[in-house]
Amino acid sequence: MAKFLIVEARFYDSYNDMLIAGARQSLEAAGHEVEVLTVPGALEIPGAIAMAAESGGYDGFVAIGVVIRGETYHFEIVAGESARGILALTMDGIAIGNGILTTENEAQTLVRADPGQKNKGGEAAKAAMALLELRDRFER
Ligand SMILES: Nc1c(NC[C@H](O)[C@H](O)[C@H](O)CO)[nH]c(=O)[nH]c1=O
Ligand SMILES: CC(=O)[C@@H](O)COP(=O)(O)O
Image (cartoon, rainbow, N blue to C red; front, side, top):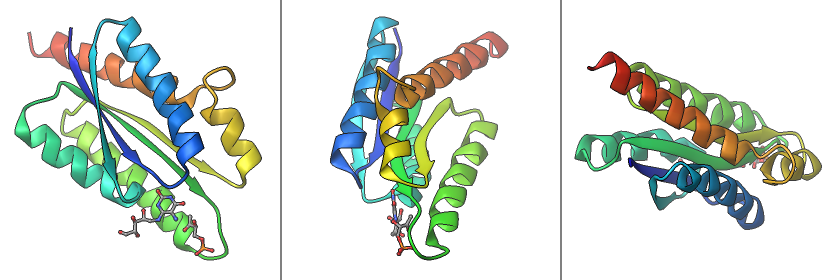
């Protein structure tokens, strides 16, 4: 059993609840322990994961959030830079699955958040578990 921390940026409650449900279901079905931490927005997720990883208290992480395009360039910054920060952490050997949705509208978001449809939360959890297995394999 491993311990996973879901770090969520809670911008849209209903979609986050679905994404977390999907991630939690995947992790708990595999016998893992799950905690949830909430941060203000997707840009804070990489830093929060870095801090939590430094604590040594978690084996893996799942980033959860929703970024829906608005009127300005801010979408590109939030979507792109949160992803870049997460990738940089994974390249440092931290097992993270990225479940931050970056969409054009709420219809696209719902399909991807719903565990009964595209289940991107569950998908991100499975990616985190896969990276943890790789890390354990290569560190033996
Ligand atoms: N517009 C969205 C944001 N924006 C907030 C940023 O993520 C960040 O918290 C702020 O710039 C302060 O540093 N965050 C989301 O998660 N989703 C959005 O749609
Ligand atoms: C993704 C965003 O930044 C969005 O929520 C904010 O919209 P806007 O670009 O209209 O400020």
